[in-house]
Image (cartoon, each protein chain N blue to C red):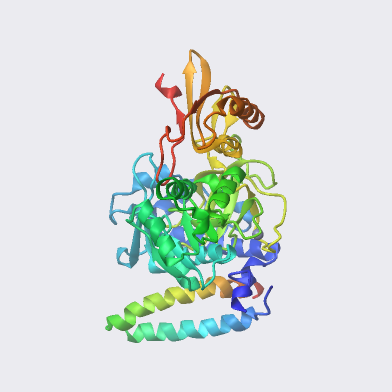
Length: 444
Length: 60
Ligand SMILES: [Zn+2]
Protein backbone atom coordinates (compact mmCIF):
# COMPACT_ATOMS: atom_id res chain seq x y z
CA UNK A 1 0.00 0.00 0.00
CA UNK A 2 2.68 2.46 1.05
CA UNK A 3 4.63 1.94 -2.15
CA UNK A 4 1.59 2.75 -4.29
CA UNK A 5 1.12 6.15 -2.61
CA UNK A 6 2.39 8.58 -5.27
CA UNK A 7 3.07 11.41 -2.82
CA UNK A 8 5.63 11.61 -0.03
CA UNK A 9 3.06 13.71 1.80
CA UNK A 10 -0.43 13.58 0.24
CA UNK A 11 -1.64 16.25 2.68
CA UNK A 12 0.85 18.88 1.57
CA UNK A 13 1.33 17.97 -2.08
CA UNK A 14 -2.37 18.22 -2.88
CA UNK A 15 -3.18 21.17 -0.63
CA UNK A 16 -5.43 23.78 -2.29
CA UNK A 17 -3.61 26.78 -3.78
CA UNK A 18 -5.36 29.04 -1.31
CA UNK A 19 -4.11 27.03 1.67
CA UNK A 20 -0.63 26.77 0.21
CA UNK A 21 -0.45 30.54 -0.08
CA UNK A 22 -1.71 30.93 3.52
CA UNK A 23 0.93 28.44 4.66
CA UNK A 24 3.64 30.36 2.81
CA UNK A 25 2.59 33.68 4.34
CA UNK A 26 2.46 32.24 7.83
CA UNK A 27 5.89 30.65 7.43
CA UNK A 28 7.43 33.71 5.80
CA UNK A 29 6.35 35.85 8.76
CA UNK A 30 7.93 33.34 11.13
CA UNK A 31 11.29 33.01 9.33
CA UNK A 32 11.51 36.79 8.80
CA UNK A 33 10.92 37.36 12.52
CA UNK A 34 13.47 34.66 13.35
CA UNK A 35 16.13 36.26 11.14
CA UNK A 36 15.31 39.75 12.44
CA UNK A 37 15.62 38.68 16.06
CA UNK A 38 18.62 36.37 15.80
CA UNK A 39 20.93 37.60 13.03
CA UNK A 40 22.73 40.93 13.39
CA UNK A 41 23.29 40.97 9.65
CA UNK A 42 19.59 40.59 8.81
CA UNK A 43 18.44 43.02 11.50
CA UNK A 44 20.67 45.83 10.26
CA UNK A 45 19.68 45.14 6.64
CA UNK A 46 15.99 45.37 7.55
CA UNK A 47 16.39 48.32 9.92
CA UNK A 48 18.13 50.22 7.16
CA UNK A 49 15.17 49.54 4.87
CA UNK A 50 12.74 50.51 7.63
CA UNK A 51 10.90 47.18 7.64
CA UNK A 52 9.94 45.16 10.69
CA UNK A 53 8.33 41.72 11.14
CA UNK A 54 4.92 43.21 11.95
CA UNK A 55 4.94 45.00 8.55
CA UNK A 56 4.41 41.70 6.74
CA UNK A 57 0.65 41.26 6.47
CA UNK A 58 0.29 39.77 3.00
CA UNK A 59 2.45 38.05 0.38
CA UNK A 60 2.48 41.37 -1.49
CA UNK A 61 4.34 42.89 1.48
CA UNK A 62 7.11 40.31 1.05
CA UNK A 63 8.56 42.14 -1.94
CA UNK A 64 9.44 45.12 0.28
CA UNK A 65 11.88 42.93 2.20
CA UNK A 66 15.43 43.62 0.95
CA UNK A 67 17.07 40.86 -1.06
CA UNK A 68 20.25 39.13 0.06
CA UNK A 69 23.01 38.62 -2.49
CA UNK A 70 25.87 36.19 -2.38
CA UNK A 71 28.38 39.06 -2.26
CA UNK A 72 26.79 40.29 1.00
CA UNK A 73 27.34 36.88 2.58
CA UNK A 74 30.93 36.82 1.32
CA UNK A 75 31.56 40.17 3.01
CA UNK A 76 30.25 39.25 6.46
CA UNK A 77 31.95 35.86 6.73
CA UNK A 78 35.38 34.80 8.03
CA UNK A 79 34.55 36.74 11.19
CA UNK A 80 33.21 35.70 14.60
CA UNK A 81 31.35 33.53 15.25
CA UNK A 82 33.99 32.04 13.02
CA UNK A 83 33.75 31.39 10.12
CA UNK A 84 30.11 32.34 9.62
CA UNK A 85 29.90 35.89 10.96
CA UNK A 86 26.80 37.90 11.77
CA UNK A 87 24.14 35.90 9.91
CA UNK A 88 24.47 32.92 12.24
CA UNK A 89 21.22 32.62 14.20
CA UNK A 90 22.10 29.84 16.62
CA UNK A 91 24.92 29.24 19.11
CA UNK A 92 27.99 27.95 17.30
CA UNK A 93 27.81 24.76 19.34
CA UNK A 94 24.42 23.92 17.76
CA UNK A 95 25.98 23.77 14.28
CA UNK A 96 26.50 20.16 13.21
CA UNK A 97 27.07 20.49 9.45
CA UNK A 98 29.53 22.49 7.39
CA UNK A 99 29.34 22.89 3.61
CA UNK A 100 30.49 25.63 1.23
CA UNK A 101 29.49 26.91 -2.16
CA UNK A 102 31.39 25.60 -5.15
CA UNK A 103 31.07 28.55 -7.52
CA UNK A 104 34.15 29.76 -9.32
CA UNK A 105 33.63 33.44 -8.56
CA UNK A 106 35.34 34.81 -5.45
CA UNK A 107 35.33 33.62 -1.88
CA UNK A 108 33.08 30.60 -1.16
CA UNK A 109 30.08 31.11 1.11
CA UNK A 110 30.23 28.97 4.25
CA UNK A 111 26.99 27.25 5.11
CA UNK A 112 26.26 26.12 8.67
CA UNK A 113 23.33 23.85 9.49
CA UNK A 114 21.97 22.55 12.77
CA UNK A 115 20.89 18.93 13.01
CA UNK A 116 17.31 20.12 12.50
CA UNK A 117 18.38 21.92 9.32
CA UNK A 118 20.09 18.78 8.13
CA UNK A 119 16.91 16.75 8.78
CA UNK A 120 15.08 19.44 6.81
CA UNK A 121 17.55 19.09 3.91
CA UNK A 122 16.87 15.37 3.72
CA UNK A 123 13.12 15.95 4.14
CA UNK A 124 13.20 18.21 1.06
CA UNK A 125 15.05 15.47 -0.79
CA UNK A 126 12.54 12.85 0.43
CA UNK A 127 9.82 14.77 -1.47
CA UNK A 128 12.01 14.65 -4.57
CA UNK A 129 12.94 10.99 -4.45
CA UNK A 130 9.47 9.68 -3.64
CA UNK A 131 8.02 11.80 -6.50
CA UNK A 132 10.59 10.27 -8.86
CA UNK A 133 9.57 6.74 -7.98
CA UNK A 134 12.28 5.83 -5.47
CA UNK A 135 10.98 3.18 -3.09
CA UNK A 136 12.44 1.09 -0.23
CA UNK A 137 13.31 -1.73 -2.66
CA UNK A 138 15.73 0.52 -4.60
CA UNK A 139 19.48 0.15 -4.39
CA UNK A 140 20.81 3.64 -4.99
CA UNK A 141 24.34 4.31 -6.20
CA UNK A 142 25.81 7.76 -5.50
CA UNK A 143 28.92 8.46 -7.60
CA UNK A 144 30.04 11.81 -6.20
CA UNK A 145 32.98 13.11 -4.17
CA UNK A 146 31.71 13.10 -0.56
CA UNK A 147 33.37 16.33 0.56
CA UNK A 148 32.82 19.98 1.48
CA UNK A 149 30.25 20.57 -1.27
CA UNK A 150 26.65 19.61 -0.52
CA UNK A 151 26.09 17.92 -3.93
CA UNK A 152 24.14 14.69 -3.21
CA UNK A 153 24.88 14.49 0.53
CA UNK A 154 21.28 15.22 1.51
CA UNK A 155 20.03 12.87 -1.20
CA UNK A 156 22.05 10.13 0.51
CA UNK A 157 20.33 10.80 3.86
CA UNK A 158 16.92 11.11 2.18
CA UNK A 159 17.30 7.81 0.34
CA UNK A 160 18.07 6.20 3.71
CA UNK A 161 14.98 7.89 5.16
CA UNK A 162 12.85 6.39 2.38
CA UNK A 163 14.29 2.99 3.21
CA UNK A 164 16.41 2.56 0.10
CA UNK A 165 19.75 0.79 0.27
CA UNK A 166 22.41 3.42 -0.40
CA UNK A 167 25.82 2.67 -1.91
CA UNK A 168 28.30 5.53 -1.34
CA UNK A 169 30.33 5.62 -4.56
CA UNK A 170 32.79 8.33 -3.53
CA UNK A 171 36.54 8.26 -4.33
CA UNK A 172 36.20 5.37 -6.83
CA UNK A 173 37.07 6.26 -10.41
CA UNK A 174 34.47 6.07 -13.16
CA UNK A 175 35.35 2.56 -14.30
CA UNK A 176 35.33 1.21 -10.74
CA UNK A 177 31.94 2.85 -10.20
CA UNK A 178 30.50 1.21 -13.31
CA UNK A 179 31.80 -2.17 -12.19
CA UNK A 180 30.29 -1.65 -8.73
CA UNK A 181 26.90 -0.75 -10.25
CA UNK A 182 27.12 -3.93 -12.32
CA UNK A 183 28.29 -6.11 -9.43
CA UNK A 184 25.64 -4.93 -6.97
CA UNK A 185 22.79 -4.55 -9.49
CA UNK A 186 22.06 -0.96 -8.47
CA UNK A 187 18.67 0.33 -9.64
CA UNK A 188 19.10 4.11 -9.37
CA UNK A 189 21.78 6.71 -9.87
CA UNK A 190 22.28 10.41 -9.17
CA UNK A 191 24.80 12.76 -10.83
CA UNK A 192 25.21 15.80 -13.05
CA UNK A 193 24.13 15.36 -16.70
CA UNK A 194 27.77 15.79 -17.73
CA UNK A 195 28.80 12.89 -15.52
CA UNK A 196 25.83 10.69 -16.52
CA UNK A 197 26.79 11.06 -20.20
CA UNK A 198 30.50 10.71 -19.36
CA UNK A 199 29.88 7.45 -17.46
CA UNK A 200 27.91 6.07 -20.39
CA UNK A 201 30.75 6.98 -22.78
CA UNK A 202 33.34 5.35 -20.51
CA UNK A 203 31.27 2.17 -20.19
CA UNK A 204 30.74 1.98 -23.94
CA UNK A 205 34.10 3.07 -25.27
CA UNK A 206 36.59 1.93 -22.65
CA UNK A 207 34.94 -1.07 -21.01
CA UNK A 208 32.76 -2.59 -23.72
CA UNK A 209 29.80 -2.44 -21.33
CA UNK A 210 26.42 -1.30 -22.62
CA UNK A 211 25.14 1.08 -19.89
CA UNK A 212 21.56 0.24 -20.87
CA UNK A 213 22.25 -3.34 -19.77
CA UNK A 214 23.16 -2.38 -16.20
CA UNK A 215 19.61 -2.36 -14.83
CA UNK A 216 19.46 1.28 -13.75
CA UNK A 217 15.78 2.30 -13.94
CA UNK A 218 15.93 5.93 -12.81
CA UNK A 219 18.48 8.71 -12.67
CA UNK A 220 18.22 11.97 -10.75
CA UNK A 221 20.21 14.88 -12.05
CA UNK A 222 21.39 18.12 -10.51
CA UNK A 223 23.94 20.86 -10.93
CA UNK A 224 23.33 21.65 -14.60
CA UNK A 225 20.18 22.29 -16.66
CA UNK A 226 20.64 19.13 -18.83
CA UNK A 227 17.87 16.92 -17.43
CA UNK A 228 15.32 19.58 -18.40
CA UNK A 229 16.82 20.12 -21.88
CA UNK A 230 14.77 17.68 -23.99
CA UNK A 231 17.59 16.55 -26.31
CA UNK A 232 20.06 15.99 -23.46
CA UNK A 233 17.45 14.16 -21.40
CA UNK A 234 16.70 11.95 -24.41
CA UNK A 235 20.38 11.10 -24.88
CA UNK A 236 20.75 10.15 -21.21
CA UNK A 237 17.55 8.09 -21.19
CA UNK A 238 18.58 6.26 -24.37
CA UNK A 239 22.11 5.55 -23.13
CA UNK A 240 20.98 4.10 -19.79
CA UNK A 241 17.51 2.82 -20.74
CA UNK A 242 16.29 4.65 -17.65
CA UNK A 243 13.98 7.51 -16.76
CA UNK A 244 15.92 10.72 -16.13
CA UNK A 245 14.55 13.32 -13.71
CA UNK A 246 15.67 16.83 -12.93
CA UNK A 247 15.89 18.57 -9.60
CA UNK A 248 17.17 21.97 -8.50
CA UNK A 249 18.92 22.93 -5.30
CA UNK A 250 21.76 25.02 -3.97
CA UNK A 251 24.00 25.16 -0.91
CA UNK A 252 22.57 28.44 0.41
CA UNK A 253 18.96 27.52 -0.44
CA UNK A 254 18.19 23.82 -0.13
CA UNK A 255 16.60 21.33 -2.55
CA UNK A 256 13.68 23.42 -3.74
CA UNK A 257 12.38 21.94 -6.98
CA UNK A 258 11.80 18.55 -8.59
CA UNK A 259 10.47 16.78 -11.60
CA UNK A 260 7.87 14.04 -11.01
CA UNK A 261 7.29 10.77 -12.89
CA UNK A 262 4.75 12.52 -15.15
CA UNK A 263 7.74 14.39 -16.63
CA UNK A 264 5.86 17.64 -17.35
CA UNK A 265 8.87 19.29 -19.09
CA UNK A 266 9.50 21.28 -15.97
CA UNK A 267 9.99 20.96 -12.24
CA UNK A 268 7.56 21.44 -9.35
CA UNK A 269 8.50 24.00 -6.72
CA UNK A 270 8.12 22.60 -3.21
CA UNK A 271 5.91 25.50 -2.18
CA UNK A 272 5.30 24.20 1.32
CA UNK A 273 9.00 24.58 2.13
CA UNK A 274 10.03 27.44 -0.18
CA UNK A 275 8.64 30.74 -1.40
CA UNK A 276 9.74 31.40 -4.98
CA UNK A 277 9.34 34.82 -6.58
CA UNK A 278 10.38 35.68 -10.14
CA UNK A 279 11.78 39.15 -10.75
CA UNK A 280 12.03 40.88 -14.11
CA UNK A 281 15.76 41.27 -14.78
CA UNK A 282 15.42 44.75 -16.29
CA UNK A 283 12.59 46.38 -14.32
CA UNK A 284 12.75 44.50 -11.00
CA UNK A 285 8.96 43.90 -11.13
CA UNK A 286 7.65 40.63 -9.73
CA UNK A 287 6.39 38.36 -12.50
CA UNK A 288 3.24 36.48 -11.53
CA UNK A 289 2.09 35.26 -14.93
CA UNK A 290 3.43 32.26 -16.89
CA UNK A 291 5.66 32.62 -19.91
CA UNK A 292 7.91 35.51 -18.83
CA UNK A 293 11.46 34.77 -17.80
CA UNK A 294 13.11 36.41 -14.83
CA UNK A 295 15.49 35.66 -12.02
CA UNK A 296 14.50 33.76 -8.95
CA UNK A 297 14.28 35.31 -5.50
CA UNK A 298 13.81 32.51 -3.00
CA UNK A 299 13.09 32.02 0.68
CA UNK A 300 13.71 28.75 2.49
CA UNK A 301 10.80 28.85 4.91
CA UNK A 302 12.17 26.56 7.60
CA UNK A 303 15.97 26.80 7.59
CA UNK A 304 17.24 28.34 10.81
CA UNK A 305 21.03 28.36 11.36
CA UNK A 306 21.82 30.71 8.49
CA UNK A 307 18.46 31.79 7.07
CA UNK A 308 17.82 32.14 3.36
CA UNK A 309 15.34 35.02 3.13
CA UNK A 310 14.71 36.56 -0.28
CA UNK A 311 17.98 35.28 -1.64
CA UNK A 312 18.84 36.59 -5.11
CA UNK A 313 19.78 33.27 -6.66
CA UNK A 314 20.45 34.52 -10.22
CA UNK A 315 18.71 31.39 -11.54
CA UNK A 316 16.63 32.20 -14.60
CA UNK A 317 13.18 30.61 -14.54
CA UNK A 318 9.58 31.11 -15.68
CA UNK A 319 6.23 29.83 -14.43
CA UNK A 320 4.45 27.18 -16.49
CA UNK A 321 0.80 27.78 -17.30
CA UNK A 322 -0.37 24.20 -16.96
CA UNK A 323 -1.09 21.80 -14.16
CA UNK A 324 0.57 18.39 -13.94
CA UNK A 325 -0.94 14.97 -14.51
CA UNK A 326 0.56 13.85 -11.20
CA UNK A 327 -2.04 15.85 -9.30
CA UNK A 328 0.39 17.92 -7.24
CA UNK A 329 -0.77 21.46 -6.63
CA UNK A 330 2.81 22.77 -6.43
CA UNK A 331 3.41 25.08 -9.40
CA UNK A 332 5.79 24.09 -12.19
CA UNK A 333 8.68 26.07 -13.57
CA UNK A 334 8.81 25.55 -17.30
CA UNK A 335 11.85 23.66 -18.49
CA UNK A 336 13.45 23.79 -15.02
CA UNK A 337 16.24 26.28 -14.36
CA UNK A 338 17.11 27.64 -17.80
CA UNK A 339 20.45 29.11 -16.76
CA UNK A 340 22.09 31.71 -14.57
CA UNK A 341 21.42 35.41 -15.03
CA UNK A 342 25.22 35.85 -15.23
CA UNK A 343 25.51 33.30 -18.08
CA UNK A 344 22.72 34.69 -20.19
CA UNK A 345 24.54 37.21 -22.26
CA UNK A 346 23.88 39.49 -25.19
CA UNK A 347 25.63 38.51 -28.39
CA UNK A 348 25.13 40.87 -31.32
CA UNK A 349 22.34 42.38 -29.25
CA UNK A 350 20.48 39.06 -28.97
CA UNK A 351 19.93 37.37 -25.58
CA UNK A 352 21.65 33.99 -25.63
CA UNK A 353 21.28 31.19 -23.05
CA UNK A 354 23.99 28.51 -23.41
CA UNK A 355 21.31 25.88 -22.72
CA UNK A 356 19.64 26.77 -26.06
CA UNK A 357 22.83 25.79 -27.92
CA UNK A 358 23.03 22.55 -25.93
CA UNK A 359 19.44 21.72 -26.91
CA UNK A 360 20.33 22.12 -30.62
CA UNK A 361 23.65 20.24 -30.57
CA UNK A 362 22.24 17.26 -28.72
CA UNK A 363 19.16 17.11 -30.95
CA UNK A 364 21.27 16.41 -34.04
CA UNK A 365 22.03 12.78 -34.80
CA UNK A 366 25.65 12.25 -35.64
CA UNK A 367 27.05 14.82 -33.23
CA UNK A 368 28.79 13.76 -30.02
CA UNK A 369 27.73 15.03 -26.59
CA UNK A 370 30.58 17.53 -26.24
CA UNK A 371 30.70 21.05 -27.63
CA UNK A 372 32.32 24.39 -26.91
CA UNK A 373 31.05 27.93 -27.50
CA UNK A 374 33.48 30.81 -27.80
CA UNK A 375 32.32 34.42 -28.04
CA UNK A 376 34.83 37.12 -28.93
CA UNK A 377 34.97 40.41 -30.75
CA UNK A 378 36.46 41.41 -34.10
CA UNK A 379 36.66 45.18 -33.90
CA UNK A 380 33.27 46.17 -32.54
CA UNK A 381 31.45 43.12 -33.83
CA UNK A 382 30.65 40.09 -31.68
CA UNK A 383 31.59 36.72 -33.14
CA UNK A 384 30.41 33.34 -31.98
CA UNK A 385 32.17 30.08 -32.69
CA UNK A 386 30.76 26.63 -32.00
CA UNK A 387 33.03 23.60 -31.86
CA UNK A 388 31.35 20.21 -32.11
CA UNK A 389 32.44 16.58 -32.52
CA UNK A 390 31.22 13.85 -34.83
CA UNK A 391 29.89 10.83 -32.96
CA UNK A 392 31.57 7.46 -33.61
CA UNK A 393 30.20 6.02 -36.87
CA UNK A 394 29.50 9.45 -38.41
CA UNK A 395 33.10 10.32 -39.37
CA UNK A 396 32.25 11.09 -43.02
CA UNK A 397 28.99 12.97 -42.40
CA UNK A 398 30.36 16.45 -41.58
CA UNK A 399 29.14 17.99 -44.85
CA UNK A 400 25.58 16.81 -44.26
CA UNK A 401 25.47 17.72 -40.60
CA UNK A 402 26.87 21.27 -40.80
CA UNK A 403 23.98 22.94 -42.70
CA UNK A 404 21.41 21.22 -40.46
CA UNK A 405 23.25 22.46 -37.39
CA UNK A 406 23.45 26.02 -38.75
CA UNK A 407 19.75 26.07 -39.63
CA UNK A 408 18.67 24.83 -36.23
CA UNK A 409 20.95 27.28 -34.42
CA UNK A 410 19.58 30.17 -36.45
CA UNK A 411 16.03 29.00 -35.71
CA UNK A 412 16.48 28.45 -31.97
CA UNK A 413 18.90 31.24 -31.06
CA UNK A 414 18.53 33.85 -33.85
CA UNK A 415 22.29 33.96 -34.32
CA UNK A 416 24.81 32.94 -36.99
CA UNK A 417 27.79 30.83 -35.94
CA UNK A 418 31.18 29.85 -37.27
CA UNK A 419 31.11 26.07 -36.99
CA UNK A 420 34.17 23.90 -36.46
CA UNK A 421 33.71 20.15 -36.65
CA UNK A 422 36.21 17.85 -34.96
CA UNK A 423 36.80 14.12 -34.66
CA UNK A 424 35.31 12.33 -31.69
CA UNK A 425 37.41 12.80 -28.53
CA UNK A 426 39.03 16.11 -29.58
CA UNK A 427 37.17 18.50 -27.25
CA UNK A 428 37.77 18.75 -23.51
CA UNK A 429 35.91 16.30 -21.23
CA UNK A 430 34.51 17.34 -17.85
CA UNK A 431 34.05 15.15 -14.80
CA UNK A 432 31.26 16.87 -12.94
CA UNK A 433 30.15 20.27 -14.19
CA UNK A 434 31.09 21.38 -17.67
CA UNK A 435 32.46 24.77 -18.73
CA UNK A 436 31.48 24.80 -22.37
CA UNK A 437 30.76 28.52 -22.74
CA UNK A 438 33.67 30.93 -23.04
CA UNK A 439 33.13 34.67 -23.35
CA UNK A 440 36.43 36.31 -24.29
CA UNK A 441 35.02 39.76 -25.08
CA UNK A 442 36.26 41.49 -21.93
CA UNK A 443 39.82 40.47 -22.70
CA UNK A 444 40.06 42.61 -25.85
CA UNK B 1 -4.27 8.15 -4.54
CA UNK B 2 -5.01 10.83 -1.99
CA UNK B 3 -5.42 10.38 1.74
CA UNK B 4 -8.03 10.18 4.44
CA UNK B 5 -5.60 11.31 7.12
CA UNK B 6 -7.20 13.40 9.83
CA UNK B 7 -4.52 16.09 10.05
CA UNK B 8 -5.85 17.48 13.34
CA UNK B 9 -5.76 14.07 15.00
CA UNK B 10 -2.22 13.47 13.67
CA UNK B 11 -1.16 16.88 15.00
CA UNK B 12 -2.51 16.06 18.47
CA UNK B 13 -0.40 12.91 18.64
CA UNK B 14 2.66 14.81 17.39
CA UNK B 15 2.17 17.40 20.12
CA UNK B 16 2.08 14.70 22.77
CA UNK B 17 5.40 13.31 21.50
CA UNK B 18 6.78 16.87 21.55
CA UNK B 19 5.63 17.26 25.15
CA UNK B 20 7.26 14.01 26.29
CA UNK B 21 10.49 14.86 24.43
CA UNK B 22 10.62 18.27 26.18
CA UNK B 23 10.13 16.65 29.59
CA UNK B 24 12.87 14.12 28.87
CA UNK B 25 15.22 16.89 27.66
CA UNK B 26 14.65 18.71 30.94
CA UNK B 27 15.60 15.74 33.11
CA UNK B 28 18.44 14.61 30.83
CA UNK B 29 20.64 17.70 31.00
CA UNK B 30 23.48 15.90 32.73
CA UNK B 31 23.30 12.74 30.65
CA UNK B 32 24.78 12.94 27.14
CA UNK B 33 23.03 9.79 25.97
CA UNK B 34 19.68 11.31 26.84
CA UNK B 35 20.35 14.93 25.90
CA UNK B 36 22.08 14.31 22.56
CA UNK B 37 19.62 11.68 21.36
CA UNK B 38 16.80 14.06 22.21
CA UNK B 39 18.30 16.70 19.90
CA UNK B 40 17.93 14.19 17.11
CA UNK B 41 14.45 13.14 18.20
CA UNK B 42 13.43 16.78 18.40
CA UNK B 43 14.57 17.37 14.81
CA UNK B 44 12.49 14.40 13.66
CA UNK B 45 9.47 15.72 15.55
CA UNK B 46 10.02 19.06 13.81
CA UNK B 47 9.78 17.29 10.44
CA UNK B 48 6.43 15.80 11.49
CA UNK B 49 5.28 19.29 12.48
CA UNK B 50 6.34 20.74 9.12
CA UNK B 51 4.44 18.00 7.34
CA UNK B 52 1.25 17.94 9.42
CA UNK B 53 0.99 20.39 12.33
CA UNK B 54 1.67 23.42 10.14
CA UNK B 55 -1.25 22.40 7.92
CA UNK B 56 -3.50 21.67 10.89
CA UNK B 57 -2.76 25.14 12.26
CA UNK B 58 -4.13 26.76 9.09
CA UNK B 59 -7.63 25.75 10.19
CA UNK B 60 -7.15 27.01 13.73
ZN1 LIG C 1 3.93 16.45 -11.49
